[in-house]
Length: 55
Image (cartoon, rainbow, N blue to C red):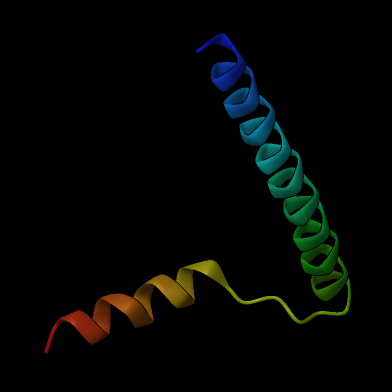
């Protein structure tokens, strides 16, 4: 039973490490996009979403 718990912890740790690596890559990509002026205005996006829900 203890072996199973350790294997589960190792699996969860590995999944967390992969998630962390993926997230760091996404942040790098997003930062580069913002540096190139490709970002979206957050307020405009929220307004657009709210407008869609009015109908």
